[in-house]
Length: 246
Image (cartoon, rainbow, N blue to C red):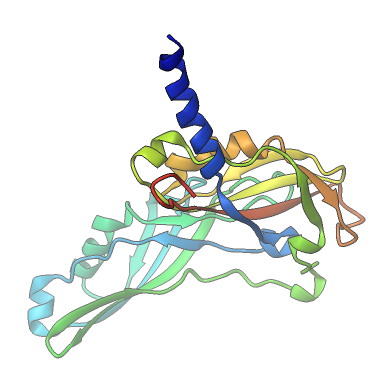
């Protein structure tokens, strides 16, 4: 009976000792974070229509759409202009799989829908197809009126539970980077956590939520005097090492 209990405890201890996410750095905060527009997470390249490729036909397409809170495109809002309809049809075929990091609400620190504007280029070089996409157009920001101090000038983590490497991700050898936005009040307490869209969210979100809710922060001189909270974006790097975690 004792040996039966010891093995799970030993495995758990090993995961706790070797499996905490590291490089938990602040990558954005305050006004600078709230002003960010859409960012690409992943894009599936559309196929170059064979008939148009054979003729050497090229095109520049302009796309507009609404991006949902989860980072997916609302396909009912997708508008494509420019070029032959076959190019547009090729983009529509894959756009449902595109993923973006949406803007955040300046008060709740939660993701909100955003307006997407970008371009797709279909080009032919030496008879070979080349398909590329632009970054989303960013909204204009009046930076002179914004507080552009970094999050590291506003808060410093002082206590809390480490973000532990999830057992399932460890077992399946999954590693990657995950970002999340944490709402921190002027007492240094966490009042909200949102893991941002990305390929590894499904693996690591529960572990981040469990760990971060216990964090406490020291309030630094750079914390805005006229606010009760800030939104701070953190990046967690989950890496396996020597078969035992980090």
